[in-house]
Length: 457
Image (cartoon, rainbow, N blue to C red; front, side):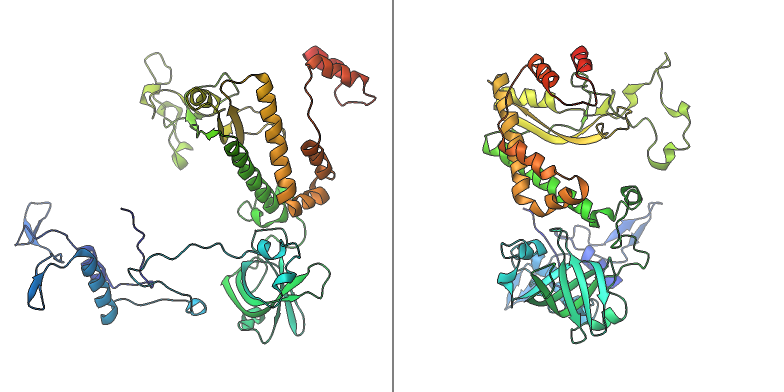
């Protein structure tokens, strides 16, 4: 039986109290002398003898103390004697806490900014409601009697504008400079109609709490920064508009992928990442080995440290798997074996290619979707691929409108129109010969001449 155990309040036990708690045993003491043995074999008494169960008089009868009651007694005794001290942040002191032994509370979805601003009326239906917003400060504008704070929690591209005046509880943290770009804050306020044109609603703050401060050197400011610069700040780049939008759209694509195949009766197969197979020579592989020292030891390790056979070859028998192993280039072989038992299956996971090609079309790591259909032909394969592609494209156009508008404006203009064509127009099938003839008749100049394509075919 699994159980989640946590004290009702954070406890800081003194050393002896902790030792007494850790020395509990559940069986009667078989050694009345309570001796331990030193390395020299000499018997010594225990410094902290464990508590053993023994009958305890209760209302004239002898009852054995069960483990749960004994645990509660130790903790309660520590609290009463001052051996445990509660440490609670004042701003969260009123947060409801469960009692010891109570059923764990229901897990509930947090209210996000996307839930407020993603509604058809963009939040106007919540005017007058008192809400709590938790997120990170994007921008801060301090005026003479009022402060505007843009807060983003990552649920959507839009920020929640929080209006703070001197009457708000915690305003001293704003005056002290603790509320800065990048800081994480907890804000409670009333939803009101916004006077600005960029948003329909804003939050009139009643209370603000700084959960985590931001360093003055925080590098992600309002101005745009290059992707090359963000490579050097990889731990912070998810907070930018571009990487946040990419993460949300990719999440939607992954969800739509599973949704499509599950709705069509497929079984997801989790193919192994480390494998000994080359999967039909799909690409150059990354080798996985323990023969080379790990971490910092590998930098200064000599080549002779790799074990070799008598013939001077690498002795793979001394490796972790006893033979060469690689990062997978495809889950196809696993999917094929499962398709012969489960009919329609698909793999969806990371794959790796070691081609030394520094182009945007060659990735060292990427996620690949590989469906395998039993009792199907090429026409079934084409129908499946078409239906899947249109399904996921339609899904992101309907569920990631704000992020797609951002891409259409700042990343690639016209992307929404092109994807809409994919989702709405019919796909046709043709041979390579028909496709080449169609290109030859087209009155367009291609980057690569069609003649070269014919020779390649």
